[in-house]
Image (cartoon, rainbow, N blue to C red; front, side, top):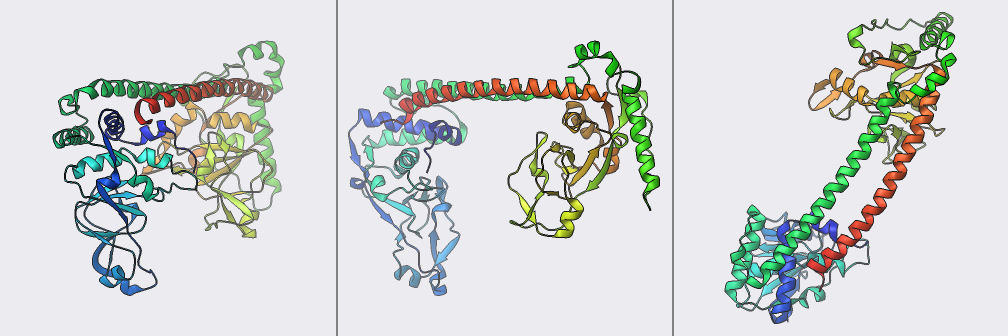
Amino acid sequence: MAKVSYIDHIKKNDISVILAEVIFRNLKKDYKSLPLFELAETLSGGTPNRANQSYYGGKIPWFKSGELNDSIITMSEEFITEEGLNNSSAKVFPKGTLLVAMYGATAGKTAILDIDAATNQAICAVVPKNKSIRKDFLFWFLRAHRYYYIDISRGGAQPNISQTVIKNTEVPLIDENEQKSIVEFLTRIEKTKEINYSLIPKQLHKTIKLAFEHLDCLQKLENENLNQSSYFSFLRQSILQEAIEGKLTAKWRKTNSELISGDNHASKLLEKIKAEKERLTKSTKGAKNAKALPPISEEKKPFDLPEGWAWCRLGEAAQGFEYGSSAKSIKTGKVPVLRMGNLQDGVVVWENLVYTNDDGEIQQYLLMSEDLLFNRTNSRELVGKTALFDCEEKAIYAGYIVRFHMCGQISAHFSNYVMNSIYHRKWCNMVKADALGQSNINATKLREFVFPLPPLAEQQAIVDCVEKLVAMIDELEKQVSARKEQSEMLMQSVLREAFAKG
């Protein structure tokens, strides 16, 4: 198992557990300690043979390690019979027994039995035998050692904490009143996040305050990282918006006026596309003209276009608008079926794939390079996300996706910028239909999307400019990420020194 980051440990756990680590570490410095086995008996349970049905379904509660929840447990998922108990290494432990998960994903988790119950062999039962040690004090002690137990038990795919490690853990010996106060201090923090310094020994006050300072620094570092991540996302979005409004290529237009005027004007390109569509319709037997798209009124134009550009409906500049396959997919097969989860930030992500072996489906829904994939049904935040299929790999697409293809040499890359812009996201939010927690934008609405079309040459100039700027942002983000890793490594050293070491 890979080493657990102490920063990740802090983020995942309640502040009460982190402070418990600090408290018990410092108590060991100031008080005499004894190994746990001198204060409590440590035992493990067992699992009756699963093949014998008479061993299960009885009246004896039987807990598995996955049921431990760092709290009091009263109800088990399974019960065993007296016969199952007697023919296995399972044992009934008394109410008040402390439990520690030794194996698997929940390794190090704890619980207190509120009933007499048996456990499986993946649980270490801690039965106090010294009345000078409170059970709830030992419970917090064991919770505070989860990171320590996991950290020294690495090696396999999952942690495997030995009973020997648990029984040899040094427990600080403090008087019962101080134990009670520390338990109350930690319990109050866990339940209400309220700090009462009067409940803990004075020598711990400075340490706890310092711990809060370190935790505050960690939170500030985390906030800074989140802000930086948001900033890079904002930069990319801003670049796309500037691109589709023609602001990135203002200088280019001044020096290339002949490429944006006359026959190179975007309106001329639209005329050629319209004529070609009409020609194909006439020459194709049984073909019908697509439904006429509504004209674009002035109030539908969201921003002013530069010279040489033209507004159009997406359906005028693209073709296809076909829904994908609704057939059931399989885990392995000949051709992957792209689903909405495979469309991320304008690109196709080849992860968590499903497949098809159906030749008819493959023939009907096979994707071509530079197809655009539009997610027509998703959450309100994600409906309308679009990705460019920019490869020669074989793949088909699922039913919640609309596939379309740009006409007349219109750049698929530029079109993808438009479909991933702030403008397009606002449009999706405006036209989506909501029902049962899902939003939908059908192909008819998609064809009506008002699309800003530059001249062909400027489309390529925009793509070149965006790729250059995005590459610069990617490089800057890598540098910031490297500094972030260095900061986190330094912070981790400080936190381990302050909280967990020793």
